[in-house]
Image (cartoon, rainbow, N blue to C red; front, side):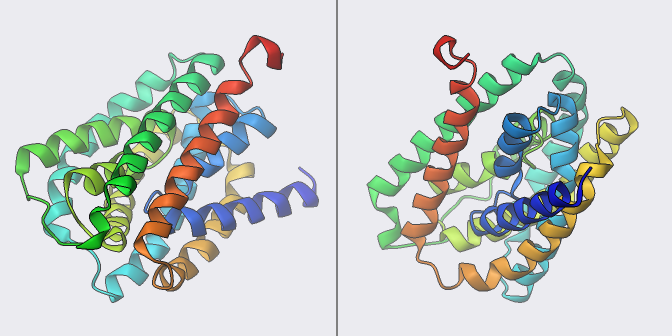
Length: 257
């Protein structure tokens, strides 16, 4: 790998982590399309490599959010309990995906979530942000199962499931959602990383510069988040989801070949 490629990966990791931390997604949803579209890395390897970046990103950003007292630990615990076993199952499932199937499936997930988030923004719930999400054990466990499975299959850390869920189901300030999501991802992603690593699905040469960038980006994200309004954070999330989905799906259309 050339130094220019390593520098590019470092920059990608930094920018992905800054943006990922702002919306509580860990940066994986940015890195995965890049690794698939420009580097052609296989699905299982993309998922494993991305999870390492997600952990580096969320670990550093979670420290900042914790200091700001923005993390709802009580809300996070049921999600963590459901995500751990589901994450192990996800590592096995991703090996069954073809490259096309992975890209299209991931793109459809992103598009679906972008629609839900845009509906949330249009509804204008941010006018009176409250911590009204019900701390329901079974809802948390179910959400954690979905999150853990998606995390290991797609390498996204699970925040991409939890953030829209909390924004839609609970009228919580987006900064609190982002912080709590980052905390959950930081706790659960090591399970998927270990499982992927044991299966040889982590490209450490690509991972190293991404992780270094992720640490830098995750560290500065909390201070940036405080300067952005709630509608801006939600709009940024929706735009990023749509852009990533389009890139993954369009490349497999007949006219794009």
